[in-house]
Length: 82
Image (cartoon, rainbow, N blue to C red; front, side):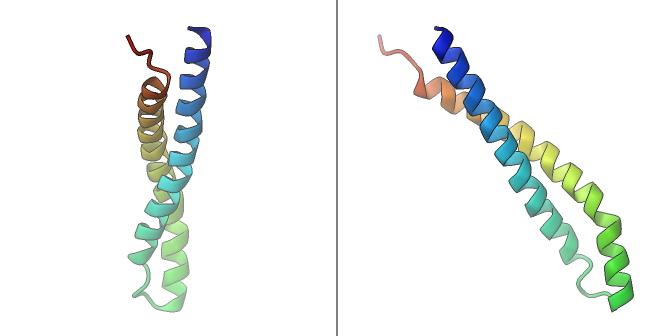
């Protein structure tokens, strides 16, 4: 029982951190596409303006989603038959 809890917790945390990283990168990429058709100086300012919010939004969403999915998978992996 104790090993099951440890495995589920580890998988949830690992997938949560991974999901946070990937979510932040994807959201940053999508937000930076909005800045691509700006002149050079405005493009830099637009990128600097949108980067913190995009990383925060994507990381938070990815962290929650990854943690929930990781806990679910951990529960399936450690499920007892019978």
